[in-house]
Length: 264
Image (tube, rainbow, N blue to C red; front, side, top):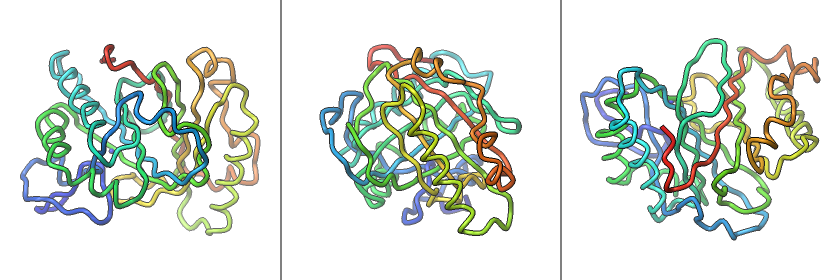
């Protein structure tokens, strides 16, 4: 992954929308889009603060290829919006969760929370969501976080494989313990062979996150690099002192498609 007043499908705390009766919009919101393509600003290699935005979609099994193409083409077209630094959407390569089910993903990046909010409110974005996403999805989940000191290109090149990890902590976990979890993930990602870029932070848009608070992305050169390290490893097996703080974990792998080869 609303009341009578709709909010963006990929939610941000500062955006409000016109009234709709669509049942999925009542419980899901979406961030605004900005300009970017798969090659967008990929040459920007620097250390900077970036807003990460992830949306997971569960497409209905009754959706046909025409509907899937319309959804993915519509979502990827939002990369041309002026607020977007990077955006890609496609089918998941691999998914792990004991309780949730998702089939597709959108990953995008922004300079600021305001850019994300502006993307969410953009009419092009709202049109894609209402006409191509909501009719064929029965669930969505969205998370947003601030990636401090993101190193390397802000754009993720086609063919790259990304691993997204979302962590839901047990109720009542103290802020100090939450910080230990974030620090531990950062240390582990720094030791993973083949990883080219990593981003870790706390979700700042809780309304559509299903309780998941800690988010991370690891960018690999390709599927071979991703598969070369232990795909089935649970990071919390290595650090038992924080494992007891974790309620549930979602891990998804995604291969960034080329603009010409929409993955259904």
